[in-house]
Image (cartoon, rainbow, N blue to C red):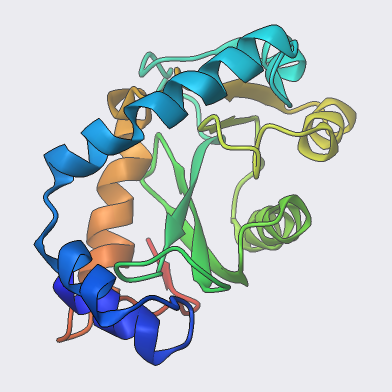
Length: 203
């Protein structure tokens, strides 16, 4: 927290007094959670009274798939988005759209700036062009960069089976999570602990 506070102040992202900065450097994660408990409860109440969250109606149209892939068939893809933002998610930073084919283990990655639905969609189409096999299905996590009308309609138009994982269940995406580590994070972690996105391709 100390390093991040100094970094944000140096970039002008955080305008606070030295006294407040000292308190931020000493605060623990448990104290932060306790201080924000009321705000979280208020936000939860607002969501529950304001109707469904954005994208929640679309999620009901997309089937949940666990790890029970038929590995005898080539063409089923797991996709995820890997952030390269260091310790802070503020501002724009590079991300890697990461995709792996379940049966063969083939992996493709495409860098994008930010995490917009349009950028993600374009990256997936570029990845699909490079793959030496026909796509049969696409399984993604629950982020809005994947769960959106643009990708949903594309999969329907292209006759791709579009599925998603359960929220907060990383084991549902075990294949792509493994590739995220071996093919992205392990390769791109810099000596000072931050990551840099770039185009990579491995099989």
